[in-house]
Amino acid sequence: MSGARRPVILDCDPGTDDALALWLALASPEIDLRMVTVVGGNVGLERTVANAASVVGLSRAVVPVVPGAGRPLRGHFAGEVRVHGDDGLRGVTLPPGPPPVAAVAADAIRAMLHTMPPAGMTLVGIGPATNLALALATEPELAGKLREIVLMGGAWGEGNWTPAAEFNAASDPEALDILLALGVPLTLLTLELTSQALVRPERVAAMRGLGDGACLRAACDIMDAVLPSRRLGGKGHPLHDACAIAWLIAPELFETRLVSVQVDCGHGPARGRTHVDRWGRSGAAATVTLPDTLDTEAFFALLGRRLARLP
Ligand code: RIB
Ligand code: CA
Image 1 (cartoon, rainbow, N blue to C red):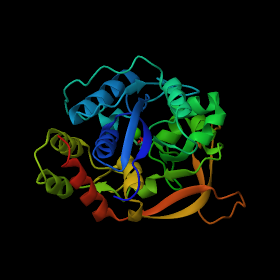
Image 2 (cartoon, rainbow, N blue to C red):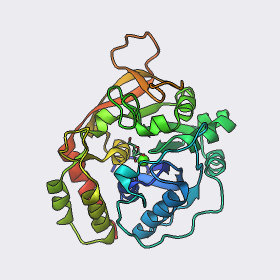
Image 3 (cartoon, rainbow, N blue to C red):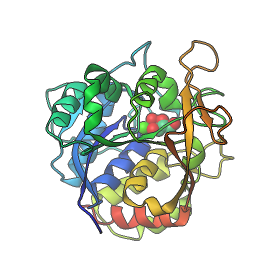
């Protein structure tokens, strides 16, 4: 591994794919995971916080888990229990983790950014972007402390929450709009990218053979419990959030292009739609890095190797 470990704050809404992303981050020496902040989203905040604590606890890592927003900047979180189940982990029960930190995510993010050098921190958002937006809207000058913002969200084609919009973007479009306007290097992993990280039974079976640690077993149980995606023809389910971590630890698995992105904050049927200009037709400045393609087999091989390192 070349280079120093990369300081990261991971904001999540566990959520089955969030759990895999968390374990991948915790298993990867390239990442110095400083804090896990939690937002409502896939399921309610109380459940997403408990799930984040359990996932971190099972890895035996000592990383603070900080609760954040239980609702978006406007409106309310709708939840996605059809995919993640009422408990957020498709019925896979993990031992309770350590108690969350008695703080508020947006405040904790700001406090940690104040301790960082310029361009020192990477923010990874794999749920509705409410916590990240609240932190940076409160102190916009803290954007100078950021090396990169990496988000799983949006789509340039069909949505997975409405026909027009992807779940994270649709859950809090105003929050995404705030992050897009910061001028910080931003990488957006959309549904078109994550659909290439398709979990299939044979891929999980191969991972189970890599070890017998509790995290690997739980990760495989979760992946086996999620139903195939109708949107993707029932061939498997996309491991959305782990792609955001793979981008940080193995960027060579991706091909990218620079694009402009606008998010629809209206209240019509297109609310939360991300208008991703892949061909420069709008004339808007192309400042967002859009991973276009993923080396799928290498991604799952990396995921399996890393999960096998965990306790
Ligand atoms: O649309 C996929 C995203 O929404 C993922 O982050 C998933 O966990 C849900 O939050
Ligand atoms: Ca998520």
